[in-house]
Image 1: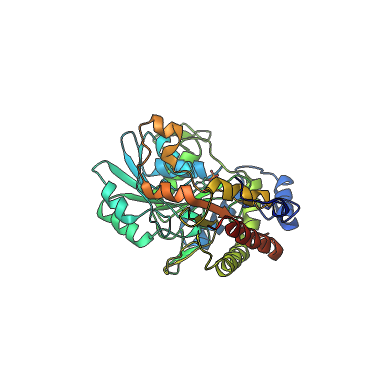
Image 2: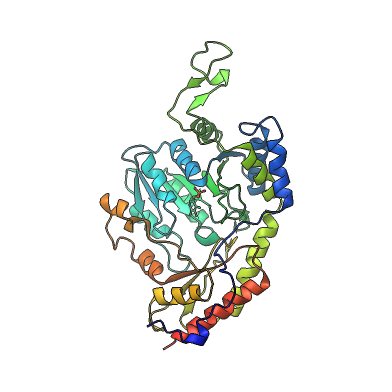
Length: 396
Ligand SMILES: *Cc1c(COP(=O)(O)O)cnc(C)c1O
């Protein structure tokens, strides 16, 4: 039973509206072309220009750019000296990368359940998962709403843990008026095309710690240094020294040039995202069976995702049917996220279903609506009309 009768099953629009997409203009393209015409297409000066821009924007001292956000998280785990047997507490309601980075270092991801209002990691659950093997917390600002950074910082300090913030969703967001990136020991941003700004693939770690800064730089480039004052020995001007096992995770100057250009547009992108979210909040309010995203007073989200929950107690049918109905109308809805530990790879490692009941309940009822700055007002109207229509079709 699809619940959709023929005249209404027609798409509400000609093309499918994706859930997220980049916004590039001629200025961005020209910035990349300029680098292509220059001397350095990688390991040139544009990387540092991009790093400085991001660090300055978020209010952090240092930044190290990486090939992508996942590599950046790997770098953060290396910098934090996560090793075999070390436990790292993270959320199940995230993309795979937030916990895979722990596995890369031989560490053990420990999943703490989420808060059912914000869908962010619950600080109380975090405290309960701390053991004498816990080394770090990787907190994810789900959908763009920052985690409770003050509480998590306090927990980290009291237990001697490194606090890593996966802020792939929250570039431009603030918590208690402070920008995300200025607070945790290390904060990661991703520049994948669905995120706030893009470099194609790309990621960055920002930090206020000189120690982490140097470790991140070494890790990004084979664990080697060319700085004479950091070398153990020195054979001559040609000499480079490998002191740690690193990777080649360097961003190119072409990507960095795109990043610099996109950074100039970040505030307008975030404002547009907030505008669209406000329209959803206003025009979808009060619909029976539909839960809109709750926002804490302390946080000002940068709205990477607009997630809704659809209540089976109130609506007929299943999430799959509501989802399919929206897709049939050409609204490119999505679902974020499958609890990481329910993935076959994690199950093989011994994680069991049922571990984080809130994350599982959330996942089973969640639908993400399209949200990106390039959406037109008409696109937003299409989404609102479609959601209203599907809910009314399935209301009991
Ligand atoms: C996008 C994303 C990442 C990984 O970033 P990539 O640049 O795609 O490697 C990590 N964590 C979260 C929560 C993300 O959304």
